[in-house]
Length: 106
Image (cartoon, rainbow, N blue to C red; front, side, top):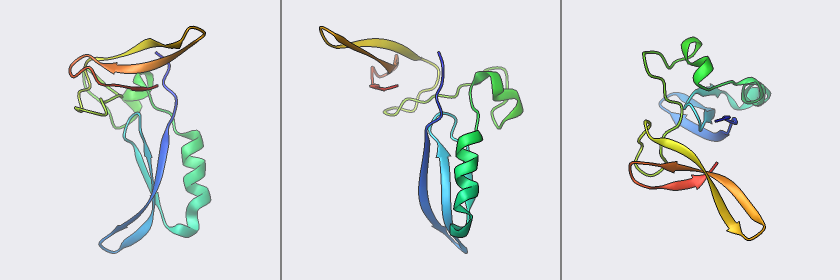
């Protein structure tokens, strides 16, 4: 399964830090910058790579690396890609959790 980068950027205020944080919705990697460093955050979002083939060089290590988590129950070990028929001429891929049967757009 091919994993596309999906980066969510949000303003953050924590203790003595006010800025912006980018969050990869595939592997949960984050990158925070001050508001005047927004171009750096955009560059990070563009060059960020995640996926099973990059797990050893990133924050995810161990004998089993999972980069997707169910949006409903948080499970990471039974996510599959399924083809969903929308109408007689349209089909799209979605992700499905085998644990809770949750399904969301890929």
